[in-house]
Amino acid sequence: MPGCAATFSVDESLAACPKCGNLLDVLYDWDRLSVPPSLAALEGKWGRRADPRCFSGVWRFHDFLPFARPDQCVTIGEGQTLLHRADSVGRYVGMQPGGLFLQYEGMNPSGSFKDNGMAAAFTHGRMIGATQAACASTGNTSASLSLYCSVTGLMKAVIFVGSGKIAKGKLSQALDFGALTLEIAGDFDDAMARVQDVSRQLGMYLVNSVNPFRLEGQKTIMYRVLEALRWQVPDWIVVPGGNLGNSSSFGKAFFELAQLGLIDRMPRLAVINATGAKTLFELYEEQGVRWNGGHPDLSAVEAHNERMSAEGRRASTIASAIEINRPVNLTKCFRALEWTDGVVRHLGDQEILDAKAQVGTGGMGCEPASAASVAGARLLVAEGVISPEARVVCILTGHQLKDPGATVAYHSTDQKHFDEVLGSRGVRRAAFANRAVAVSNDVDEIIRAIRLYS
Ligand code: F0G
Image (cartoon, rainbow, N blue to C red; front, side, top):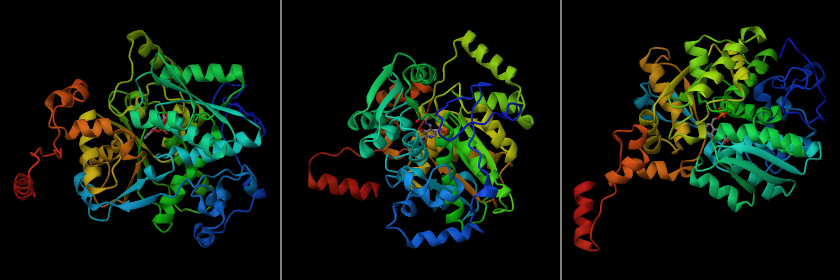
């Protein structure tokens, strides 16, 4: 925090400032580093794809996260992701053609944006000689950590998940990659608290986004968005908000580029909560808590947490990736919102799943939490906050196959199954369902069905 201003060496492993207890930030002495003269100057790396540090969508931007020497950087080929112009999803959102773009982070090796941050955290973990790495997770961080451990063999993964709280696709990854998987009797917020206690006691390297190096890697998602837009800054970045690592790192990415004179304006950031997990919305939009030049009203945050405890309030949404009521990066997110004149909104599971179905038919497909960005953009256009003429980038954070359960239930013809999985969460209808057609095992019947339904 600016008021504390303690500094620590890059060789230390700290999840919080030992002096003030707040989050740590990675700061660079840009004057002593070689910074490219323009963003376009980075394009020279495109022709050097045989060099893993240029192939990686994280490390080709090493100039902006130079905490490790290039030869120390760990990569498994993360960040080969694309920005797609998505006009049909744009129509749904209420945008003009050419205005809506989807940044598809599901193309990462473990199927989510987490690999961007994991490449950086792993690099730091290796620098300091860590042999065991831990995280709490709603499923994607744990999948990513487990993958980096299995591919590189550099560390052993210990993951903490809320029992029954992570989608099967994600759990199957951690199990398959060989991670020690602890199913805690509780939810993500419980697992997050426990992993911090336990990793302190056992000296395990923590890769959750309290680790500031994780966030350095996630800045590169924004560099790739700029790259795809030929270095033009979009008007809006819309991102789902869970533990608030992405939103924090996106703000830092743009702030630093502006500091370096490499961009001439900031985009606006919209962070989208699920209605069943809307701590950020309540604090920022309802109670008006702000970064306030580094002096946020932490007593308001404390009081909010106590209220949730007293009421026994637990996060609850089909978008299990963002089913989080106590986001660890809250203060950094306030800072990002200040830098970007940001807004926060929340959407129910109905809106999130409808948006997800639209992404499926007109985009690359995504898991429920990712679709919160599209649902959020739609709400902000309807409110008149985002102009239909704007250029908007929604971040699709995770792959469609991470949570097939939600998708199949949405499109199901089986009302009982629909009610069990979605009705219990207040989802009443599947406006964009694509129902499978049941036919008998007979060529004429099959042909009749195709003629009837195509
Ligand atoms: N989308 C997906 C697919 C996620 O997995 C997460 C977070 C988010 C959005 C929220 O991002 O935390 O940066 O605000 N997943 C974490 C996990 C919590 O454990 O995998 P955030």
